[in-house]
Length: 259
Ligand code: LHQ
Image 1 (cartoon, rainbow, N blue to C red):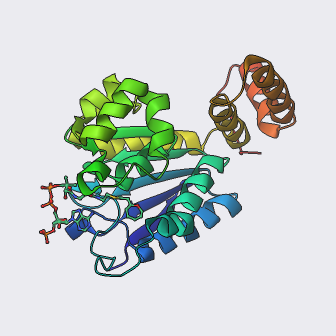
Image 2: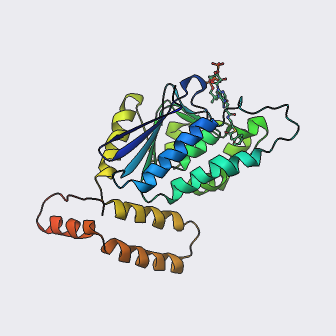
Image 3: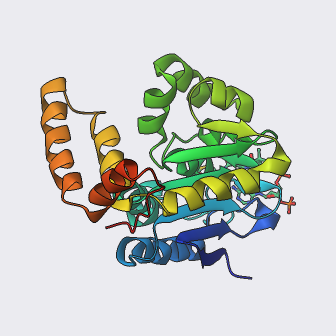
């Protein structure tokens, strides 16, 4: 069974984590699939949005804990992050296209933070988020210690990371960790609708919006104003900008090509 299912439709590259028996825990093979999919998203103009979800009742239970030999003399947990998780998160963050995450069930450990590394997260009401690391004597990784305090604030991030308590999708929405929580039966339709709508949007502008919002995390106001100027300059050179204005003046829906 392929650990990652990849399909393309209407400009949306859908990636489905596919190890349902382990709640889609990450393996080296799944990471290889994700790396290849990221290359495709980065290089294929036809890909205008990425949608990530999980097969079965879970979204992702983090690293597959059976993949590593715990009797080994020298265990280097940082090496796996350097080799697989950190490049993945960096590429997701830097991708100039939107990534929608449809969290269909429990998201634990690196699985929870992989979801938070996506640009817009929608979760099923029965889904939950667990910073499971502390339960096995580890620390949040996969960008969790960066995303969590920025999304939820220091107190909530600290308590989630130190207790490893389960956070419901409804609370994740209330706390601002995710965009929205929807009824389980609506998740596929809602996330698909959003992804298709983004895929028919002004892709260049969406990529620049992503950069503006993420760079604001480490810019002061002066630097951010400069960045907005530079990004607007770049957006203004796009065909979609001309089409957007033309369509507005002609009182019709714009037809964006992503250029
Ligand atoms: C699993 C897993 C799993 C293997 C469920 N592995 N089989 C770490 C190391 C190295 C470098 C990089 O970074 C990381 C980051 C990390 O991600 S560390 C955190 C790893 N994840 C966890 O500690 C979570 C472990 N899982 C759980 O706590 C529970 O499974 C949760 C709370 C997610 C779900 O609980 P339940 O709904 O009760 O399901 P379950 O526990 O019965 O799991 C179903 C099956 O999936 C079960 O297999 P079985 O053969 O008994 O049916 C589990 O063994 C398997 N599974 N997570 N991470």
